[in-house]
Length: 218
Image (cartoon, rainbow, N blue to C red; front, side):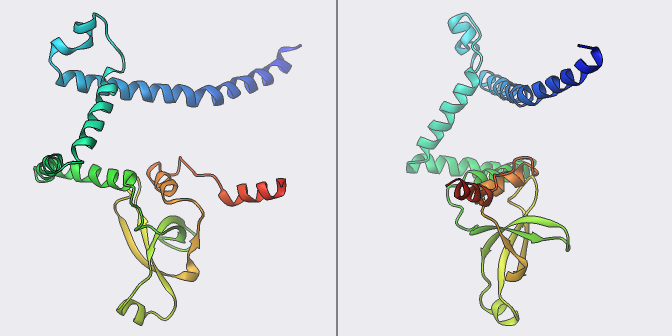
């Protein structure tokens, strides 16, 4: 086999290998980076005599990640009683009122509340709207229908829509749009939040296409 015929196959094999190994390698690098940060953070808070190298004579990778997991579980357990809830509330108040810290803390507090809260009933549906002008589409959340004066002065059926910003979905714009200008999507609120936070890199599957394929297969 000549080199000219072999080269395209080698290119194909090379890029196929990149497609397979690329996500795995990047995932391992990110995990290693996070574990390294957690190890440094936890070990920095512990006295030297409690470090794994001092206790067991060898460095234990992931000790910080395990310590962080235990810490998160302990904090969750603490918040289940009045004393723990009072302590957490005081800590949150202290961080949110400390100059130079409150801006960063409030930003991450809003993001974690939005992403990990089990109560997302304020977002009824995920919709697609043309914003900020015709021809440009963006993902938004339906939050309800207008009432009172807003309902009285509008001449057509309207809905309340929240347009989140990227990568912080806790800030955004409140819009009142005609029902005819809104396209409802089948993706869940969690999937849409991941889509916004990842700036479009984490896209949910097309549920309608999957349903049609299953019906055709049946």
